[in-house]
Image (cartoon, rainbow, N blue to C red; front, side, top):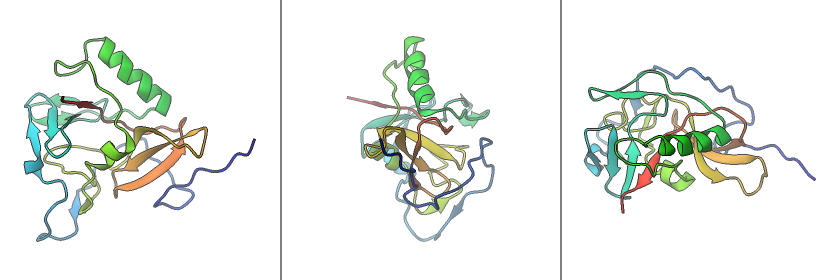
Length: 179
């Protein structure tokens, strides 16, 4: 059996991962450039969920561990391993779900990438739609087929893709299909 390191697609081979969410102010590249994920592309349900009109996916506004209160995500997002993320999602659904739905799941890599706002960083996400999102790494449900131990995700600090060992700790945001 050959073991190979998992390398980030956009990052250097070695980097530190903070388990404390970043609280830096978001920076956007150009004031006159249209955002890639404009607020008008999302329908808010006023219950901590939004539907992305382009994809038809319903997203939890807050990262897992945060709570939706008065239009804001409060508290600290919870980092977990890939396996814990899968189990936590299943447990949440079995315990009644969220916002009246019990079919939440970890988004696949393509779905997670669809909410990246590449015009901005720290975080690379539309903060009007997803307030208080940590500028950190998030798991997708997509395993890395080139590694028995890896899975893909997105760094919402700059919007970069990565693959890392499934026993590392990253944040999650859940999604469901609306049809």
